[in-house]
Length: 417
Image 1 (cartoon, rainbow, N blue to C red):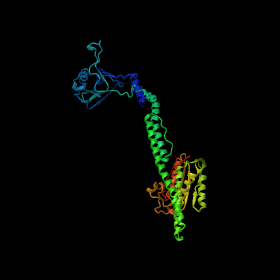
Image 2 (cartoon, helix red, strand yellow):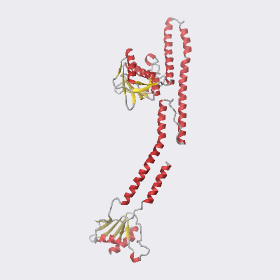
Image 3 (cartoon, helix red, strand yellow):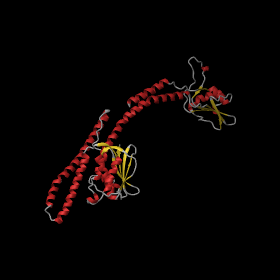
Image 4 (cartoon, helix red, strand yellow):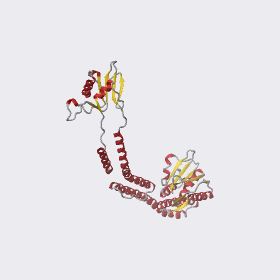
C-alpha cells in the first residue's frame, strides 16, 4: 500500500514537472477601452453586452488602479467606469521590461473581469472576456491524468487483491468452522499480522473442537456406563410378579433404545465419512420405497438425477430421519430433488402442524423434543435431527426447517456436489 502511494505521488510530481503551466490571457486596457467605446468588435476575444446596472462595487480597492487607467483611456471620470474581478488581479502594476521607458508601459488586465462604461442614456456597456470552453491545457492535463490512471490501475488492483485475499480466507475458514468444528485449520502464511490472526483462529477452532469432543465423549461414557446397572435391573425384574414385570420390562427396553440411539449419535459424529459417488435420486427412492413397504405415504417427485459424492450410510440415515418425521407428525411426506447453483437440494415437505418459530433451530439440539411429553412413541429420543444435521455438516452442507406458507413443514438439505 505504501509503495502504491509513493508511486502515485512520484507520477503526480512528474506530471507537474512535465506539463507547462497555463499561460494567462492578457487583455490590454487600450483594447478594452476600444470595445467599451464601440470602436471595434472582437467577438473572438471579448463579449459585449448592455445592462441597466453596472457590475461590481464602485469602491472595490482591488481594482482602483486599473479602473483609473481605464477611465483615463476612455477620457471620462472614474464615476462613469466600473471594473470588477472574479478574483484579485494578478498584477497591480503595469507590465514593464527592464529596457522599457516609462512611456512604453502598457497597462493590461489578467483573468476574468467585467469592465463597464456609463452610456448617455444611463445604461451601461459591459465588456467581458469571451468564454472559450475547455482550453488546450485542460486537455493536456486530462490526458496526463488518464495515463496516470492506466499506469497505476493494475498495480492498485494487485494491491487490493493482496489485501483482500486474507479476508476471503478468514471468511471461508469461519464458514467451514460453523459447519464442522473438525474442518481443516487455516494455512498460517502471509504477512506477520495475517499469520498471527490465522494462528489465533486455529487456536480458537481447536478449543471449540475440544469442547465438542468433551461433550460427545461424556455423553458416550454416560450411555455406555448405564448399560451395566440396566442389565442388573433386567435380571431383578425377572423375579418380579408378572403384572409388575411387564411394564418394568417395557421401561427397560425403552431405556436400552435411548442408550443405543445416544451411542449411534456419537458414532455418527466421530466416524469419518466414507465418500463415494452415488445417484441421489436412487438413494432417495430406495429410502422412500422402504417406508412405503412399511405402510407410509411417501411420494418422490419426478425430475432429473443428481450425482454427488457422499457417505451412503450417513446420508441414508439423514433421509430416513427427515422422511420418518414427516410421516410421524403429518401422515405423509413429499420429497423433491433439485440441482440449484452447483448444489444438491433435497426438500421434504408435509402438511402437518409445523413448528413454532422459536423451535425451528432448537429442534436440532441434542435431546430436545418439540413434543412436550416424554413418550418415545410420539416424541422420539431428541437425537434424530441433531444426528441429521451432523451428517449434513460433515458433508459440507446444511439442513434447516421452514414453516410453509400454505401450512406444514419443509425440511431443506443443501449439499455440495
